[in-house]
Length: 407
Image (cartoon, rainbow, N blue to C red):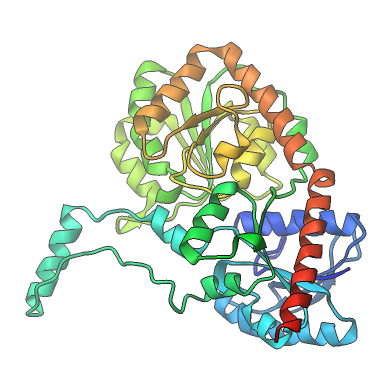
């Protein structure tokens, strides 16, 4: 089987988040399993070979996904002429493989659901405050108009991500919830949607970390943006510190723009009385992650919604006590009370209670840490995921043949 793996993000040149992590893990799994795979990604233009394997990586210079979508077509087509591909895989976000699908209708198309743009917009939305409403309305009046801030509605007519997924031969949902949401919103055919988790190749350093045994430092891993639940965590911190003096909070990840500044600045402003208990590490590379996780005893990831976040997977694998969100894929990774704790989204009170329950029960901390590590390794082992991914590819190839016969 010949596979073209198309991903704007691919480490080490470009790994913005979970998509890049998945791409690296998936290609390693496929190559180890004997699949003939080539990678097409962004980065400095040229072709290299994956470290530790013979997988070619073809990179095109592209500033964003839109430019990448265009530039990648000729590169894939040239390689297809030399030795034809059976299929390509690409994420739905940015419809990165849409133009390849149009240029090469004869090969099968697999679309992996990570999180579409409209869901990022939906779950990251922050209602404007009174000042934002007032500023907008006064500005409109100065221009001789009457205006009010309203949330933009999302239309799927002409949405390239929706069209790309709809034309796929196989659509893969890592979590059951994203499959259900996107099937409903995009009206996708159920028979072309499959569900299985993403593979995980944990760094050896993560497994060498001793399990957490008590809570002294609480960590957060991810971009500091509203969708990740950072606002709710920030609002929980004062109450947690009142009842758990001496605790520290460590934030691993870059601050995102927020409130005419960035999230870190906003947090320092509203938590001015707690500054001595806050640590901001900024962006963390994969190589640095084990060192930072070793400094935390619990990881709190209270996202408003997530599909299949690697931050949760890495926290579990490192044997930290994990507090995750009950909204989305974390609820499929964590068994509440056994491998971690789950809290409802947008609830500072629930976050507070979960952290304090760990502070007061050190025996629970170690129990969750050990069980969480064991569980995630069993669920996401590449040798378990590989047969599922290969079966998915075979379904795509069969569907592609039916599609071409119907033309």
